[in-house]
Length: 131
Image (cartoon, rainbow, N blue to C red):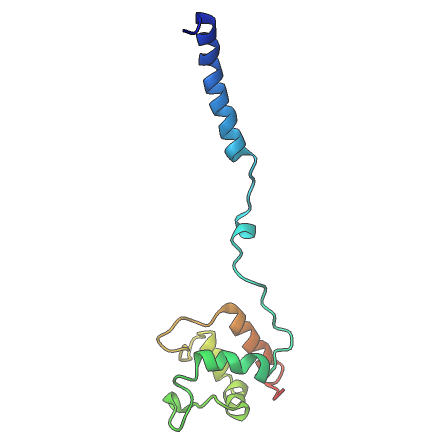
C-alpha cells in the first residue's frame, strides 16, 4: 500500500499532469481557418479567350437552354458570333451579374461563381474577341 507521502504527491501530480497534457494536446496548435480550409484556387482571368475560358463556362451553365434550333429566350450561345451579340449589347454581363433590369441567369439555378463571372466580364471588356 502506498504511503501517505506518496498519496499526497499523487494528488498534486495528477491535476498537474492533466493540465500539462491538455496544453500539449491543444495549446501548441495555432491554426488559421483560411489556410486550413481554402475557398479554392485563385481565379485566373489571364488569357480569357472565348474558346479556352468563356465557351466552357457557357457549355456547362447555359447550353441546356441556350442552344439548338429553338433556344429558350431566343438566345443561342453556341458560337462566338451569337455570344458576341449579347456580350456587346450588355445583356450577357447584366444577366450573369444579376443586374437590375436584366433577367438573372442561369434561370432557376445558382448564380455563376465569382471566378466564372470575372472571366466572362474580362472577355466582354476586352471587346469580346474571337480568340
